[in-house]
View 1 (cartoon, helix red, strand yellow):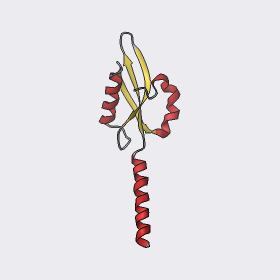
View 2 (cartoon, rainbow, N blue to C red):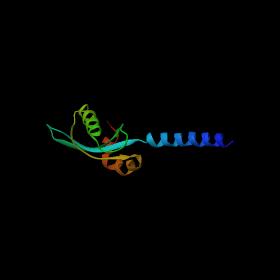
View 3 (cartoon, rainbow, N blue to C red):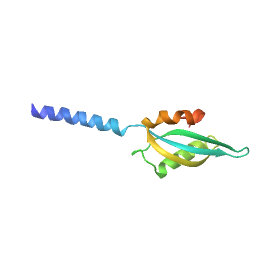
Length: 98
């Protein structure tokens, strides 16, 4: 009976760690276009683990905004979904656009 309880606890621990590892990750950034000059602030979902600033984040954001005709100026921060609501209003039309 003790072995069965240990197995059940191990399965729950594995499921919990999988849930944590799959948490969404986002970056907020600034981008521009020229002729005419336009600037925007946006929020984009990035697929990185751990959810932290890295070259992979910067390259992901850069290539995705470039596909929309924008030049990345700066990735400002990387955050999990708990930071989304606070940035939604500021990002406006560029909230999860790319």
